[in-house]
Each structure stands twice: as C-alpha cells, then as structure tokens.
Image 1 (cartoon, rainbow, N blue to C red):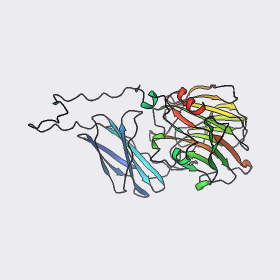
Image 2 (cartoon, rainbow, N blue to C red):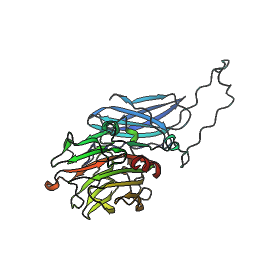
Image 3 (cartoon, rainbow, N blue to C red):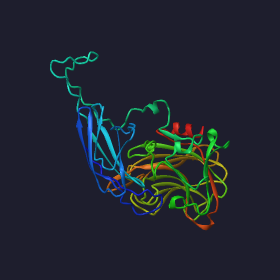
Image 4 (tube, rainbow, N blue to C red):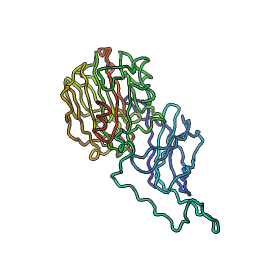
Length: 394
C-alpha cells in the first residue's frame, strides 16, 4: 500500500495562513474477499462534522464512486462488491466551515472465497480450475476513456444550464452573475459577470466568481484537477464595459486555483500593466504572495476572445507544463506560448493539492476600480485540443 499524507488547507480565495482543519491520519486499508476495509484516525475533532469516503480503480481516468458520508465518530468503513484489481480509496474530513484534510491509499481485494468442498459451483459458471492471474498495473499510457472514444470532453460547464448545476459554488453578491442569451457567444449563452466597488461576498475579497472548489461539491468533485492529468481547457470570453486592460493593480478574470488558501493561484489569467492580459504562475509551489508572468498578449474590450490552455498537472516544475493557444483578434486560433515547464499544482509536505477551475472577476479593492463586466461562454475540459475547441467555440 502507498500511503499519502493528509492535506489540511483553508477554504479561502485570498492569501492567508493555512487553517488547521481536521484531517484523517494513519489511513490503513485491509483487503478482504471482494472488499477493502478502511480504518483511520483524525488529527482533531475541533470543527469536525464527519467524513466522506470514495473509491475508484487505480487508473488515472477512472471515475470516483458516489460519496459515502459518515458521521464525526466514524473511524472505519468497509467497501464491498469489488473485483480483484487495484483500487484507490480516498477519505476526506468534513468541517463545519468547508472541507478538511484528505488521505489516499491503494489496495487490491482478495479473490472471492471458493465454494466449500462438495458444493457445486453456480450453474452459470464453469468450475474454477485455477486462480485467475492478478490484473497487471496500468501502463503510463491508458486506453481511451468512454468519453474520449465518443469524442466528448471530460466535463464542461454550459451557461445555458442552471449555474449551480454546473459549478460547485458562486462567490458573488446577489444578482452579479447570471446566465443570459448572448448572440455574440458561441452556442448562444453566456455567464454575465458584474462586479462593483465594495463587493466582498463572505468577506473573502472583492470578487464575482464561479468555482469548482473552495468549497467543493460532492456531486461535482470529479471536476477537480489531479496530479498527472493532461488536460486541454478552453473558454471564450468578452471583456465588457469597465474592465481594465491596463492596470498596475492585480485584476484576475480566470484561475486554475489550488484547493484551500496558500496565497496566489498556481495559474491565472489577469489584466496587466502592459495593455492586455497575461498568464501568471505562482512564484512557488507552496504558500506564496508572488507571481511570474509567463505570457502577455494585447486584447480589446468588446471583442470575442478564445483561449485554450494545455496543462500537465504536477507540483514538480520539471514535469508540469502549460502551452497556450488563442484567438485575441478574430484572425483565428494560433500558438500564443510554447510549451513551458512550471509547477501547475501546489503541495503540502510533498503531497500535491488538487486544483479547481474558477472564472469571474477577482481584483484588488482599489476605489477607482468601479463597475466592470465580463462575459464567459462554455468552460470545457478535454483530453484533446480538437474536442476542447469544438465544444467551446464551434
């Protein structure tokens, strides 16, 4: 079994110290016939409201099981009905004010017990002559998933649908983010995002954002980005009235943000002082308040823009990378930034922290910022560029 250290992070979108949220500790997986028994401890019961257990085949693209929610006194759970293959089991602590830490481990169930001597095996099955071989560990290159085979994205958020069916949370003052028909946007709908001076929902800073984390949703938890994933992320957007394309203050319009706090997002698209937008990368893969500009491009208010980020998710700066394509002038998609190696995840005690998608305005609370608008189309995550662009732009 391969143990993973519990990660406890704060659920805040602004730079802050990490909170000491409850976290599972000493996760132990015990294989049984067609089952895995999970047992664990807890770092603290302060603020603990329970645990969430999920499992999946130990293959990168395998889907997670539906969540099993347990009470705060639970310290074990038995997963049954499993085949004889490696499974990854994840136990997450649930805090009253969001998510606590998480631990993961891997185990392989034992084969189902043979029928007692003298008993006939089930009629529909031939007698078992020998134990089937254990399934080999998957290679680095996995076979196509069902979605890939059909030419479909891993997931996408469509503004034609109710917002909180597509996003885990909305961090905005009432009425600031709406789904509206928009003839200028591919597929005809947009998330209309407005921000005004003083908008500070829940006290987390001036923003109007949609996110797949901070906090997460048990229904949409599979939309988080995990270590080792190779993803194409595509979305169209229009900068509306009041949006600054030349500012010395920080002004973010999209993020790939680590769960919890840990300061600046690991990746962000933001306005800059050069008269356009830039791709920014946190200056460390741990808690940080600094950024490195990796790319800059000119952009105009009122025009349709298209961006595609090709991201390999890793906290290791020699493994993770970003490649950027886009259309910022109506002249067609082109390469904006060559594949550039960098950390694309943060980590705590050597353990990567999952990333989440965020769109919307998040800015320095400067008095002159005023009222500003941005319009976003479909947000698409896929394993190929063609699929990402087809579902986002065509």
